[in-house]
Amino acid sequence: MKPANQIRQWVSGVGAVAVTALILSGAAPGLAQESESVSVSAPMVKGTLPVDDPNAAIWSTAKPAKFPMSPQVHWPNRILETTVKDVSVRALHDGTQVAILLEYADPTEDPDDAAAIEFMVGDKKAHFAHGQPMAQVEGGPVNIWYWKNKDKKGVDMNAMGFGTLKVQTHQDVKATGAFSNGTWKVVFTRPLATEHSAEDTQLALGGFINIAFAVWDGRKDGSGDLVEKGSQKAVSSWWYFRAEAPPDYSGYYYAAFAAALALGFQFVLIRKLKKGQAA
Amino acid sequence: MGGSLVRPVLLILSMYVFLKFVVPNIPGSAPLPSSLIFLYLMLTTTGIVIFATLSRESKDAFFAPILNFLTGENIGAMQAARYGFLILFPLLVGWQTYGSTATSDAPPAENRTIHPAPPGEYTGLSNPVSKTPENIMQGKGFYAAFCSPCHGGKFDGKGPAARGFNPPPANFSDPTTIAMLQESYLFWRIKKGGVGLPIEGMPWKSAMPRWEVELPDEWIWKIIMGEYDGAHQSPRTWE
Image (cartoon, rainbow over all chains, first blue to last red; front, side, top):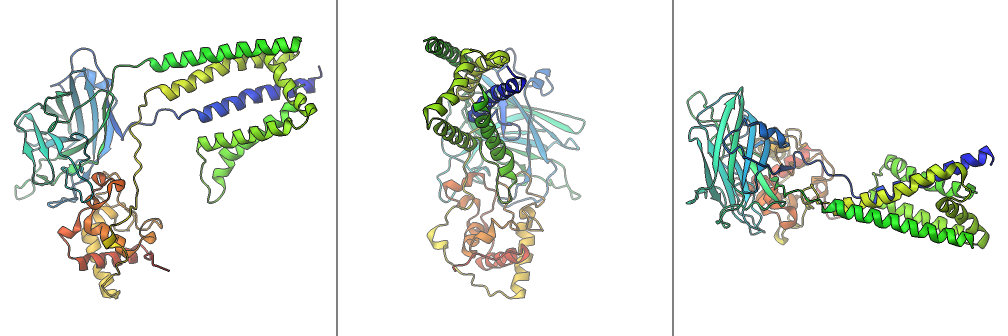
C-alpha cells in the first residue's frame, strides 16, 4: 500500500471516530450544572447529625452554597443598607432530621443578632417577602425558622404577608449559634417531616423546595436604637434546597445494559457483513 | 480504498467547526445550541448519503470502505482505529444512556416571562403629566429617592441594594427594557409592583415594591418621565 493511501485511510478512520464522538456527545445532555449559588444540597450522613454544633468537623462534608443578600426594600419599614452581604449555607440530614448551617460575617457579637430561614408551605407559591399577598396568583403561607442570639433557641413561625407573623403552637425547630472571629455560625434543625403539613414545610428526600434567608445585625446606633429590626433586615431571594435521596445506582445499570446491547449489535452486524463479503 | 470517505468526513468536520466556532463570531449571531448543531450535522450526513447513493458505482465506492473498516478486511494500519471505534461506540452509548437516566442535580428550570402582558386597564394610558423640564427634574428626584437604591443612580440596575435580588432589578439603559415598553406599562409595574405580576412573571420572586401604597399616581407618572430621560431612552409608541 502506498504511504499516501495509508495517510488518507488514517485520516478517514480517525475522522469517522471523531465525528461519531462529536455527534453523540453533541446529543448527550450537558454535564451537571453548577449548583452553587442556586441551590443548597443536603447530603445524607450516617451517624450523628451535628444538631447543636456549628463547628463540628462533619460540616466540611457538605458543599457550601453562597447567596448574596440585599436590604429589605420591598415593604415599609424598609432599610437601605445592612451589615451582612452574603450568607454561606451548608446542610446535612440523616434520613430523619435535617440540619442547616448558616455562616456569615458580622464584625461584632450583639444580643440582638438574629437569623432566619424561610420556606414555602404546601403546593402554593408564596412571595419571598413573608408571603405577601399577590394580585393575580393565590399565594400560600411561608414557614419561618428564626433564631436570636439572646434567646438561645429556634422559633417555628408562619406568615402570609407583613404583619401576620405568628409563632406556631407546636415548636419543632431547634437552633444554636456560635460567634467567633467576626463570623456567626448558626445551626437550625428540624425533623424532615412533621405532622403539621399546613404550617410546616415538608422536606421529601430528593425533591427541590424553595428556601430564602434573612439576617439581622443587632448593632445599635448612637442613640441606642437597633439599626436592623423587624422588617429592616438583610434578605435573600428564593433559592432551592434539596435533601439528597440515598444514592441511586440505576443509571449505571441502564448504562451498562445499553453498552452491552450496542456491543451485541456491533458483533451481529459485523458477523453479518463478513458473511456477506465471503459470499 | 478509504479515499472516498475523506471528503465526506472533512465536510462534516468543517461543518461542525463552522457551526460551533465561526457562526457565534458572526456579528449579530449567537452560539448555537448543541441540539441544533446535531440537527445540522445529521442533515449534512443525510445529504452526503443521498449524494453518495445516486448511482451504484458511487454507492459501492462510498460504502465499501465503511464495510471494510467494520469487518477489518484489508485495512492494514487502520486496524488500531477500528478497534478504537469498536470499543468507543458501546462506551458512548452507555455514557449517553447514563446522562439521560441519571437523576439530575440541577434545580427545576424556570421560564420566567420578563415582560408579561399587563391587565387591560393599564394598556394605552397616556402620561397625564406634561413633559416640562421641571416635571422631568422632579421625576428624577423621586427616582433618586425611591428607585435608585435598586435600579441605580445611573439607571443601570446596579443600585447598592440590588445584589441579593433574583431576578435582578431592571437595567433601564438596556434597550430591551423600558425602550420596548409604553409608559402605561411602566405605570402598571411601578404601581402594582412585583406582587402585581401574573403567574408567568413569577411574582413570588420579585422585590419590586407595590408603590401605589406609598406614592400618588402623579408622582409615578413623573418618575416614568425621569426614568426615560435619565436612561436616554424613549417610550414605545403606537406608530
